[in-house]
Length: 465
Image 1 (cartoon, rainbow, N blue to C red):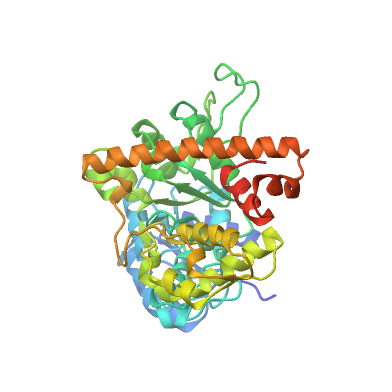
Image 2 (cartoon, rainbow, N blue to C red; image 1 turned 30 degrees about the horizontal axis):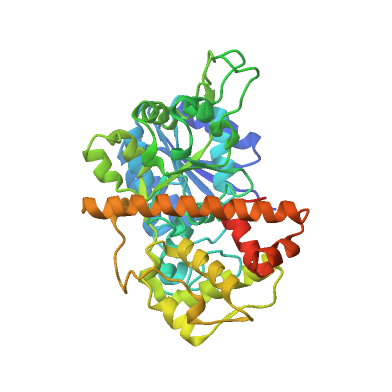
């Protein structure tokens, strides 16, 4: 392999020497420049694999160089060196397209990790300013994000751009639209792909355990802490931490999370020193986070740290042309998992799906098709096998599932109570049948008057092992 070449732009001799020594020990060649104009000239004259630039230069600042590189050489990763505590400046650089940043005094371990990550980027990958047409015009064979609609092509193109950066990304979208799938794609296509992807549902962790779950704890830190515990940040070290439903974080935890993101270090509960962590933060919620900030339920400073770049996932109703492709993939998966023959949609069933607004998005489509697969008698699913709520074409989902009408909310609560009661009765009936047949599912289905496929669906839906 040819030697990788790094451009170092800094007017401090000590910093230049430190960077040159570090790069040489990594087997990399370094060229230095002390001002913007010589740096621009070098970039025009030869190819570099990475640019490291200080933010303060005699004839300008590093942001000018970041802008120049994004216009002239968008495939070149550029990382900025900032003064200690200049997080706002670093965030601004990330917004402009910088790959990452490192603070002075330069931590050599962090610097080496940054350089390794930057050089793992695929050569020729589309840069932050590449056009949508160039970035991802069609669904790649290995992409789980299906669809040829314009919103999906735009989404895939943006993901390709964001995968090249280490900037925090806030993924917004309705429930069931595939926000975690998008986060996994950003991770998969980026330089951290071989490192851990750690997802966490912030709303599912009890508040009293949250600090321990995120940052870990030391043995004896509290009653029940019988051994050291590695938190989510350390589990994701070198990789990506995906904070789903981040709006559900309580305010005290938001303060601690903000510090961990800014300092790139965490202190376990009961620990005496901070531990550096190298984690890319992706976050998501279906709530209106800006509204939560205005109402004082979410810290504005944390919002700006998480929302360096916002990525909106389109709802299913805005890309109805993708429903056929999605349904085909989902039915293929159902057939494989349930070990049934191939399942197909009749024209009337497809028309019914394409006319539905899908307030639950792709997750709702999956549930609808699973129910239909249990009801159809043969391999062909017809419209009468599909159970769709009467929400009407183009109906927008109620925010957070809450109606403005108190009577509607009371009715919804009664419906949920009835559903819970019926589910409990159904669960008991299935458990009894399985007990009577010694766990034989085929015999249990016959005893209940169900097909084997229908019983398997109900077992999955009710969470019965």
